Length: 338
Ligand code: EPU
Image (cartoon, rainbow, N blue to C red; front, side, top):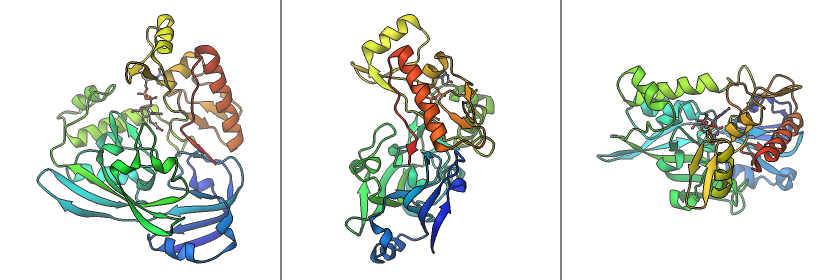
């Protein structure tokens, strides 16, 4: 199925809930629809492109004078199975959390800690989604897509995807060039449970047996207690990444603030918690007009209703500036601005 429209409103397509429109909008349900698309020689071919998944990690700043491609490819299929693993190929348009639920339902491990992350499967490899001690790159076998420049269907084994913290090749060199159509995951029949992040272990044990179902439930409980529901308060999850700084800077801050959360990466670098830095800057629950810092998780910014993309961006710049003035740490956006 192909659906092509002009001046498409984007409000229902972004969890921040900001008003914006796209000059052209192309939604499709089969990888082959992309062949049809590139072979139709239309004027919009020279316009800027943007690939939109579930719109849960994007901030539209104004009217987009280009073409939005929205892969809505469905399907979960078994590719193969052996004694340890099951390989599933999942369409880019499947809801991420429905896929997690499916895996947990079939006793397949590897994505349970990623429960309730909003968005679609096709977006998961782009920013290498991660939470509660799991990253999606650990279970990705292959990413399939379509290269708009070469006009061919392409396959990337995991090693070729250059996965990093909230990062991959699809976010950099291949941005708006390769459209992800499906992802092949390698799930575990006898998973090793990941309980060592924050309150996860404690919450799972309170639910009873340590199993996939209870891990999923614990993660859902933690997320719903901290993160705002997009149906009530527009947001795009973490607005900034957790910053990587020189160990010396982390140590310097820790002298004044012994409770600073530090995650050492190597001898010279450490990751800090951006939410903590924002909170200690005194900005938790801070509100300016229609935009605010969420009261339960300072790394999340919310739209109290009617905010424009530019208002959210200006708000975030102020937060970034104040954190820099207080700690000398430069925050980098996690959310994609369009
Ligand atoms: N913290 C505060 N105040 C806050 C928020 C956090 O002091 O307002 C402290 C916490 O107490 C904790 C540390 O900062 O010591 C980390 O907090 P948390 O576990 O809530 O996670 P996070 O680092 O803020 C990251 C991801 C989230 C993911 C959680 C759980 C990034 C940018 N964000 O947040 O992902 O759900 O870990 O694993 O890496 C997202 O990417 O959109 C997202 C929500």
